[in-house]
Image 1: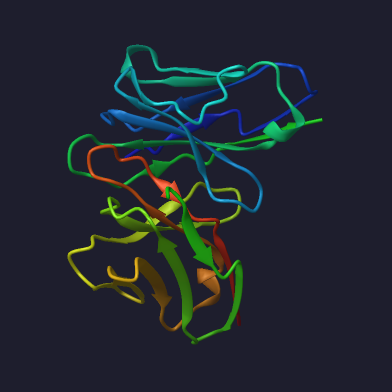
Image 2: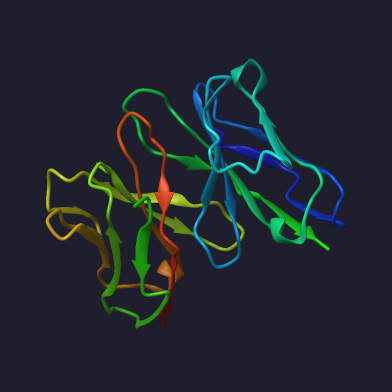
Length: 114
Length: 112
């Protein structure tokens, strides 16, 4: 079974630039999450999708972050404009709907904002 | 109330020893408590999970102990091995929302 795919693996940008991350969840997984993991901290939920609808985006800084999940499969997370404090690993995770609660994580995109 | 507090921040254990990581929560609506293991450059992977209707769950060398009244749960790694060296995260979620709240992580190093 293929895992959660994320790209790019690394990204270095200047502050105020924009950046986009891509995630392809495991086939058939209806729920998709984007997490932000700052060095030395636990993952922090940014947004949760169920199919192509947003379930929770209460911790997404909507003035600069946006995310979409077209057709309920792939998802993109965008930051515009980036700030120094956005430097982190951005993790995508997916889960089978219904009673299965196991989260499958991708390897993440490591973002450095200079 | 949505926080999950994890300790210690780091832990060094001799090979063959027992590693113990603790977590505490406040929200009594949490009903699913997983532990994730993360190696450098990789995403977290589910290690073991427990629901509050049992006080202990064991899978191989890994055991979760759960104390509902104290709102605490812990991970015990028996016969710790150098390959167990990783960062461990506890988490909690509520059925229905499946919104996972993660602890701050424990960096475990097992000395050979």
